[in-house]
Length: 479
Image 1 (cartoon, helix red, strand yellow):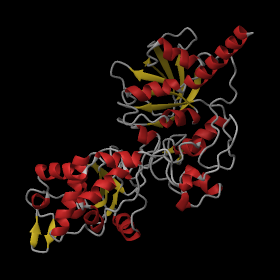
Image 2: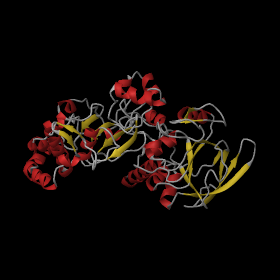
Image 3: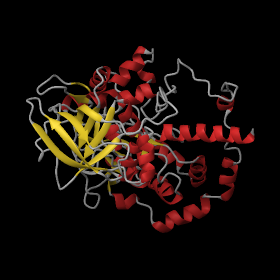
Image 4: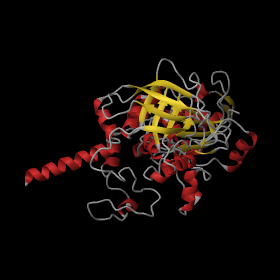
């Protein structure tokens, strides 16, 4: 337990900052000089935030030292932070799974949500680039750098303080190696692209040419069946709970960005389309395909749904004690039967990065309302923008104090076209035995503008209707 299996200096955060990047390079150079090497079980990578970084690494003479520690340049785009680390070496993966080891990733990115970095790393720590190199040398998280050596060098034990570059050393190297012309040269033709980019076929015409065979970009159904007249506030009756979740459910729990498991609904769909597992890429890379993204909604490998106790991942149950089924499959069955859905959650629902698919996928799964103890600000707004009603429990009520099992049938009382922002509504829950529980919930549509979006079914149809109406008025005026 506690082994570091991934150490990544990863784009975008920190990796355009010469101070910390050159500190990492100098630390690597000092480590190599002392005879240190990274531990063999650590998967290392270097993804600078700019090609300029490679230029000043070369000028500073540290690129070879980084490479000797296996911090090779793997690219200049999103890598480990968004789940693009790739699989661990098979012997390492086998050891982790067979022994149920709790292992870690250390990265210089800005995201470390559960299940995002790699399916096998249960702990993911954010660190500065030089510390990423340090932990790759140590090979474990449970080290006290003050009292324990980072490794054994050519002349004996080496401590972190022995190889950590002094601030003056870093400053001097920046002045010597980082030059303005590097930026001018690299960015002079930044929009030109390489031969592969320029050689891509470009369809002609004013409208986007959808490729029905594409597994990356598909025409989403957000405007299907749309009419010029807004639908208004639709009633929610006979609803069932798709998931009952705890506190601090992040947008990564709701809409993962990492790898796509072959056995998941999204993985199975890709296989049906003829995509080999090695070509799955990640949820983040396939965000232009709603078929993948809605199958990935609530599919985070660390999600725990109280409706399916004892499971971890995108599972639910449709009856007390029932067999677990995937959230996606349950959603599709409910939608075929015309049953609206709700999500129950605890505090800080939707915290984390403000991912649009966390709201889009929720809508496509047939969820009409999310009932939580509190919401993260941006995700609450995104839910409204997709026509999903956020309801907040009041007076300290929780799903537990209300005695809800999650297998009730729900009706939201008080919804109407003249509903005002922040109205208190009543939720009526009827249990399997016919016992009725009613409780208050604050409508978290907070502004009149948001209420307009909601009456239109979300901001997408709202904007399209405005464009149509304004376009028609312009045409009439010009005539």
